[in-house]
Each structure stands twice: as structure tokens, then as C-alpha cells.
Image 1 (cartoon, rainbow, N blue to C red):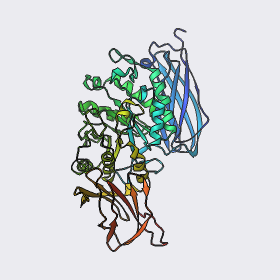
Image 2 (image 1 turned 180 degrees about the horizontal axis):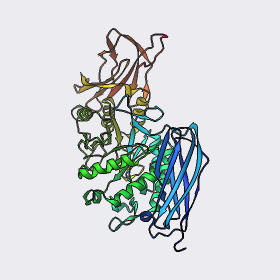
Image 3 (image 1 turned 90 degrees about the vertical axis):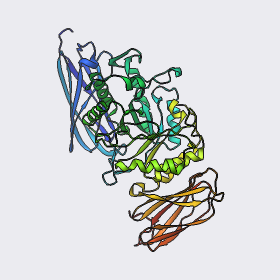
Length: 513
């Protein structure tokens, strides 16, 4: 075979649904390279209605014979593609086509909402309420299927994973995307067994309606590594990640580092590289330290703000959580707190009711959050205090048009029956509002009270919601003459109200927004 010119055979499906991923298999004859991950390349060009994309293929065999190309068609119609293989011995090319049917396989990629820029929207216009959970070791846990099933049952819709993870070696497994070992890495070759395991995990999660939030670098060794800028080894890694995962709409974003804001030039260069090379325009961010540090909030390459708050239940709900929830918004970017507390290991966020109030405060302040836990870090089936309330939390917010509403910075102060403080927080829009009352102390109760909201004149439906049980009370009517006065029933710990203006033409309830 010495000196032979490579030839290329490409196979793939003839049709695919909108937002589904089409996978082409490219087989190379007469491979002459020693290391296909470095010496060879596959590039595919796709031409369809209103869109033209060039995407990289990825090598899926040690000998370089098998390559794959993944592509997501977002517009129905006929597509043509050309796949090109290149190595030092020569080039080869093959063409084909497929039809993208109008039947959607999902909602498409997640973007910043241009009309409501503090929130997110899918390609098809569907808004997404991010409600995530940490899943650091998902790629190397023996419980990954059960963990995904449990997350689905608890109404989580995002799992935050470490693409590479070498922490806690006492657990006996690591997520290592390269060949070699963390102590003796070979950055010129990829660990295909790990990547195929990831394929299985991602497909399982996507089929159950969960998105994946990949953190590209997690381990301390990578934070202290002296990177070149550019760094060919790391760019090869990013290209492989883009080729293998980039076509999936279920991959929420690219997170550069976990809790690391060092090496700013490298992070900026990496972010711009991903923006430039990802044909689907996915969001890019990085995360900062565990006490509310804001990672590069002013940088244009950072699309959303991802602070962490790995602190305990002793932190004051109003003085700490509410303060930071509003403080982070001043940069005009969506806020996704993708680590908020966990029990044990120093955080001691072990008051389940307090935890419930924490994530309600993030949401009523216009932010999103992740349920951070020991079980999520280790990827076990351990359930932490407060996690049982997560389904009720998500159920409420997904039954509102939260993205149309903005937080009112001031809070109403009340007093519980035992003398402890109570706060009422408000998200408001033109024709709707959400109010969340909570006691600052766990197990405190309140007497009936009254609250006055400035909202435009009209008739409103008020639905009370109990965060502890997930129960809706029967709706009641109220009238505003510019001020809406509500009789608030007594409650224990917390209470929410969804207030929506009736449509004037037929008297039926509806948010006209």
C-alpha cells in the first residue's frame, strides 16, 4: 500500500428531522499515516436552504480508517454535502445529500433571547427555564444511567459535566479524553473508549429531555499548565470536541474552566476560537470562585455570567442570596448560578427549607440556578436536603411567562408570628407579576396580611402556590385601579402568587404581556 492515494467512501441516512443530528460515516482506504489525529483531517461542507456550513469530522478509529461527520440541519429542505479527506499522501472526496423533514426532533439550539436578553430561547422560539444539576463525574460513574433517570424525575433539565475530570483519584476512575494518563499524557491522541462512552451518555440524556453543560477544563493540573497561545495540542482538543459534540442542540454551551479566572489572554483566545469554529453559534462562558466571584463580566467573549455560591444555610437569605442575585444582573447578561450550595464538605448547606428558599430567591430575582450537591459531584444517587422541593420549583416557573418580567429591586418587609423577618420579592411586567414571600427563619409562620402592588388598572386572576407541596390554590379575582391590594393568607416558611391580567375582550384569564 506504500505510496497509494487514499480513497473515501461515505454513507449516511437519506432523511432526518429538523434539529436532529445526521451522522455520516467516512471510511478511508489506503491510510498511510502513523497518527491520524495529527496527520489527517476530514472536513465536510453542507449546503441547504438558507444555510451553508463547514464542519470538521472526527477520527473514530486508532488506525485512521473510520471517521464520522455530525451535522444538525435547522431548516427543512434538501441538503447536499461534500466530504473531503486529506493526509500527506493525498486527498479524497465524496458527495451526497439528504432531506431535512419539517417534523422537529426538538426545539433547536439555546440562544440569548434578543427580545428579553437576560433570558434564553430555543431556535423555535420556545423559552427554556434552566434548572440544572451538577454531574461532575458523569463520564466515569457506574451510576450514570440511574443518575440521569433520577435527574429527569426531579425535573432537572441541565447536567453540568467535566469533559476531563481527574479529581478524587480515590474513587478509582477518571474522565480522560486523551491517551496516556493524567500523570503522563499523550495530547496527540484521543481516548476513543472515553469518547464513545460519552456518546452513549449524551444520547441517553438527550432522549430524556436533559441538556448537557460541558466544562472543558476542570482539574487543577490544567489551571497551572503553562499554555502556549496559540496551543496546537489544545486547539486539536477543542476541534475534536466541536466535531464530536457540536452538532447536538442538547449541548447547552461551552464552559472554558471551572472556578478559574487566571490566564485571561488564554481564556479570551480560547473563547474566540470556539465562537469562530462552532458553526452553530453556541454560547461560551467560564466560571469563577465559590463565593460569588464574577468571571470576566465585562468581556464581550463571555456570553453569560456564571458565578458560584458554594456557601451554607447560615448565609442570610436577604443579606446574601438576594443581594448577590440582584448584584450579578448589573452587567446586563443572563445569570446562571451553576453551583449554589451543597451539604457537607465545609459548605453545610443542609437546611432543606433554607435551600428551597435560596433557589426561589435566584428565580424571583430574574436569575437561573443549578442544584449543587455531593451526590452530583460524585455522581451517586444520594439525595440532599431540599432536593425534594426542586420539582415543585420547576413546575411553578414553567407555568409562567417569567422571561417577560423584571425584578423589582425593593422588597416588602413583614414580621412573622414569632417576630422573625419576612420578605416579599416581586417580578413584574405590564400585565402580570409574581410575588414570593419567605420567612428569613426556617419553620416561622405568618398571620394574614395585606400587600399593595403598583400595576395597571384592570381585572386580575391571582393563583396562590405553596412551594413546599407544589399545590396551587383555586384562583381568586382582584381589581386594580393602579394599585392591586391583595389579602395574603397566613403561611409557614414561604408562599408564591402568580398574578395575570384578564383579557378585556372576553373575560378569560391570560397574560397579554
